[in-house]
Amino acid sequence: KQEVTQIPAALSVPEGENLVLNCSFTDSAIYNLQWFRQDPGKGLTSLLLIQSSQREQTSGRLNASLDKSSGRSTLYIAASQPGDSATYLCAVRHPGGFKTIFGAGTRLFVKA
Amino acid sequence: GAGVSQSPRYKVAKRGQDVALRCDPISGHVSLFWYQQALGQGPEFLTYFQNEAQLDKSGLPSDRFFAERPEGSVSTLKIQRTQQEDSAVYLCASSYGTGTIGNTIYFGEGSWLTVV
Image (cartoon, rainbow over all chains, first blue to last red):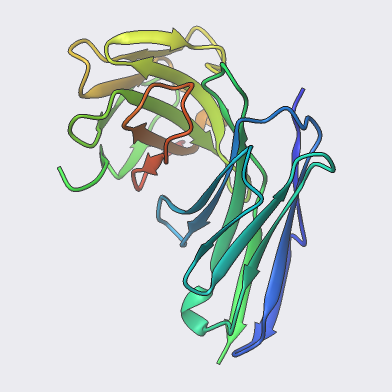
């Protein structure tokens, strides 16, 4: 059974700092991995989608990497801003399956 | 529409009451998912539709939960005889492709259900 773990559970950083959020998964036979952002009381917003054949994806100040063999992904946020404060979730999908399995998320607070 | 729309946004139900939660996916999206999210947790998969066909309902927690998408667009999640443990946010999501293809998934803002 696939399990997705995110560390740390919560993180507080000063504005401008670069930071890394970690995601690990127990079954490496994934189809893709997706990073989401969730603001309080809101739904999830997709940030980056990495297919299993890819090593990383970039969007603006965000960079996500994927190492299937070790069951790990990282989300790198450069020059953090207070507006980046949210919960970040990673999720994996398996080939031939419909479920997307989520981690519990990392709550990020960027202090001005 | 521009995004996935869910209604009601907030629902308070008395224990034992039936509730119906509506999801209006992005126009043209084939796949539709329902998730349940407890406070402080990631979403948990409930069920998946490809057009009007419910291809996976393995995440529905009990036979009190029922979902339908009769015309392949709007979907309704129905919970019968609500219990306190049903209190959660119910998220609907859609994607353009079929469920086995790695398309980006777009989520609605959720329906917050509180059972008292």
